[in-house]
Image (cartoon, rainbow, N blue to C red):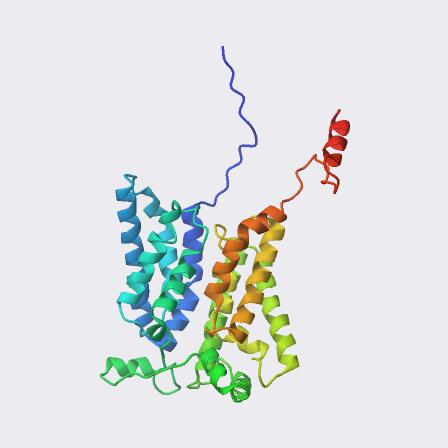
Length: 351
């Protein structure tokens, strides 16, 4: 009679891949609602196009690889479409979200083997691809909502909608004037007061909406709070240091928080368990590196935001971070500087 001894423990968690993806999509709802309110239903159109194209691309690849369509049920393709769709301008033509979703699924995900094997964040890879390929439509956003009428509602009535620069774009052109305008705008921000026709204030409310979604993910223990904290703290310290040196040239710290996609990236992008580092220390260094790169690109680079490029660069560095931050295996001595000394001591101790 053969007895099979299986290794313990046999504990099973309640979370699954599909469950985690559903929770992240649910956490995106506050940000989607805020984006739709300020920039119009074009955001929803982008989401429909990106998610539909992502699902179609994943089904096609699985069919070509002669695999079953079970991976379609894990919601990973839908999440990729959502993360990409909220980053695209509401006025973008239909072929931009479609081509971005196809690039994310084909080139950034399935080219490397599918879910769990992609070294780069698919949504950020697709966004960088679109920004480099189509810089003009990717930087034109419709004007934000005003106190009396939504600008996107004018377009539904046949009035030509206006497009404008983002808050970070405006800073690069106006400099200290934009800093003073933003400071006055933040003083009047209140849920009980009417909204003002300022892109900065729209960005502030949108950032708060992403913060609500991120807090939900932390509450549900979908993500760890350390990564967003390290990333946002790096943004604060680095930008405050530069702003203290020359406030007329460098953007103030609160502008880096409220404008752009910093808060969105802190909770929904850098916390990706696949493309991020896996060790505890490695993930901390990963968030630190993304924060430093974001401020550097925003300050001296050609792109006003730089989150996508910062994440992709740190995706390159993730294997090296895991290699140099490997935790010591329990029961083994810490490696010594001399060759062979640590192993000999370990052998003597085990004997």
